[in-house]
Amino acid sequence: NSKKVVGQPSTSGSALMATWSNGQAIKEYQDFLATGKQEIEMKPDGPSIIVTGDTKIMTPLVRAMVNLGGGEDVVIPMATLDLPESLAGRTEYPIYIAVPPPNLAEFLENLPDDWMARRADMVFFSGGPHCGCIEPVLKKFGYARDTMSQVLVGGFTMPENDMGKPRDISCKIGLDSMGLDKWAGECGACGKWAGAFHERLYKYDIRCRTGFYREWRRWMWERALFDGAFNLVGGVREEPVNLAEVAMYYDKEVSDMAWQFSQQLRGWLAVTITYGFEERMFGFAEREGNTQVAKLCTKEMYPFVFGSAPFENSQKIVEYLNYAQQDRGLLEGAPVPESSTFDGQRPSKMRQGNLRSDGVM
Image (tube, one colour):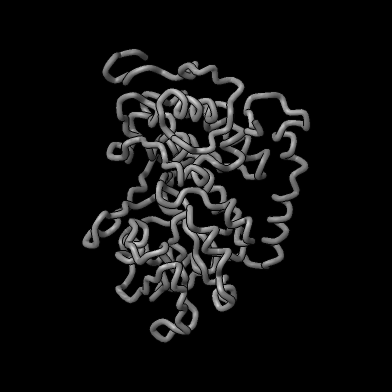
């Protein structure tokens, strides 16, 4: 059995040891300096291309982007790939790649030459249950770098019908040391078309940070941790719980996962999540999680939620994934790594029941 076992001592040194020898962070910073950019490009919004899956199905993400636009966007299925020379007189416009993550590698692998020439105009989505973390796929094809546009969604609702407009769900969680509002759950954007995406959301009072790729990457991984840990801790319960309940009653379990994950993230990918990430995650869950039931992802989405190295090497997360699959019958068919510390029983720190009802503190 060649399946990875998490929790056993490594014979080649700890991944955390790699933090100081990992040249990736240095290389990214050198690339950033080489661009010579001091300010974020803020190109205006306008008619755009939105690429969807095999058929012209209005997924929640595609519907949200169309509803936020001005009515002139062109939605095309990934199998068509007819790229117009101009849109509303503009020869340069955003190409939003709203292809479902399980189909993204196939899409990028089969791009025709005229699309390859427009790579700088492509905009990729991450964050939330519909988009997940696609960084490993983008890296494979050379798209995870400073020059690419990427946006982080999850900070707005995605209506289930064509009539609804997305609604901002970011929230204030207090004041910082300068007396300014601290926010959690915001969207984010980087790259050439960061300004266009920001403008599209701003028109509907949806908050969106803009930054360089190095900053955006920190925001993205924080969101990936939130999506993974809160839904895992809540999703394995016998009774449904929402994300606010996870934050209030199962906080120690989430915190253990979060700190293990942050260490693995530094070791494997040389990324450090921005200070205060726990306060932001819990604050967002407590304020906006009442309507979001904790739910584990499908087998198809598993690689984009739990399939990256920081998740697969976080012992507590892997214990819960094994419990979910072996004891709860969830994640059927997903490639869950084996855990040397999981004994087939409920994880040791897992609290039983809903603490609000049984009174256990």
